[in-house]
Length: 101
Image 1 (cartoon, rainbow, N blue to C red):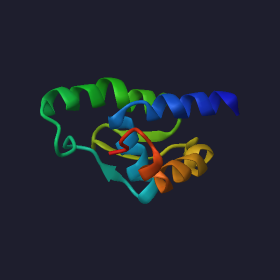
Image 2 (spheres, one colour):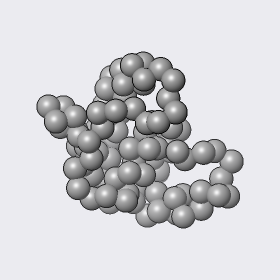
Image 3 (tube, rainbow, N blue to C red):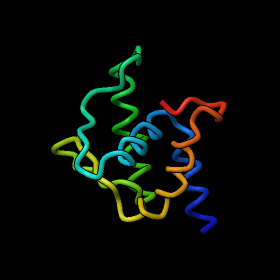
């Protein structure tokens, strides 16, 4: 349990990874991840980071499955393990010092 908790907190330490996980929390179907989120100034850099850093990390942790051809993600085999904690964090966004967007 400690290992999955450490992976979850590492995953949540990045805004891009948080956005992906919280989107999957709200939607169980395939999520297209073609465009960087609004408000990101360096859209190309964000896309490169997402493809080469953030998505592979979430795949390694088992939190997502990534269809590179469709550039879309779904919940991974370990998502159910982190879902309760994601719900607690999402439900208490206003109490947290870090933005979850």
